[in-house]
Length: 232
Image 1: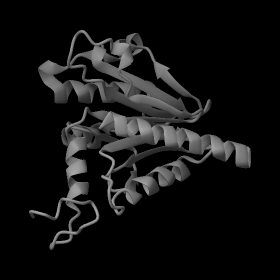
Image 2: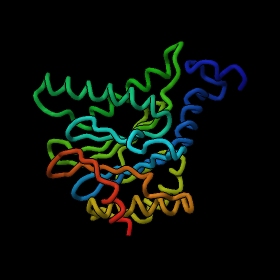
Image 3: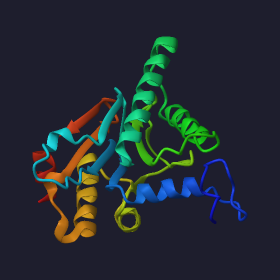
């Protein structure tokens, strides 16, 4: 494959875009993030994975508010994710100003994935090395969770994970997820999955969580004490 990975615009003889595949591998080395759709909202839980004990925990941000009714978390190059989140925030405000209503979650996801896809076919640039979980509630109170990939592909999920532990976590979610779960149940399931995957490396203080309520349509970050209470 030598030479076919020097630009993201070149296909290999077997039809692969190697730079995009490298970007996906970068995501799999990133910290794990979980999203769970519940009957009364949608939950996001992410591992800050603080490597240095001298780092101030509050300064590590991997959960973002995009609009009042949309939240997101990233895995991979967080710096790439931050740029895309800023683009998403601007797009959300433009939609409010233009149409005097909040943007649909799907429309937001499509907009960001269009940008991701563009960077797989333009010379002199590399793909975004980040996957983003978008979670939100539309005006019709429909709860939605989307995962976006570096290639620009996106899928809607009931529950999913991205990052280094995504395979193991998704196996747990597929077995234990139920449509009747509430927000607290969603947090419990996500914390339980982290416990099983991280094992002896599990530290609840590394977790950061948020949810968007179905009725309130508001993005809300939760305190670490709330997560600890549900983890008992």
